[in-house]
Image: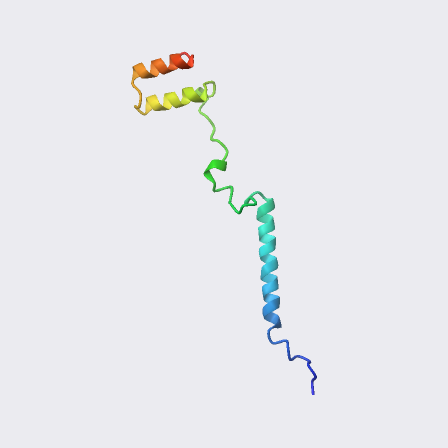
Length: 96
């Protein structure tokens, strides 16, 4: 008679394996959380478009206001005529 030795160990390896997988997942989650890869909402900040650092501006546009940059872009795309462009520059108080 064995009186309980080894009788309940048939599924013990499954629980041990699940515990190891759970610990591994916890470690991966903590590393990603503290390395800046995921924020607390679960969003991967490296993929979020609004959270990316702004692109470097071209050298000519650095001294201009954002409104002037938008105006220049719209004129370059053909959305504004030259008269509209000059008028808007005067409204902004900037010179051409």
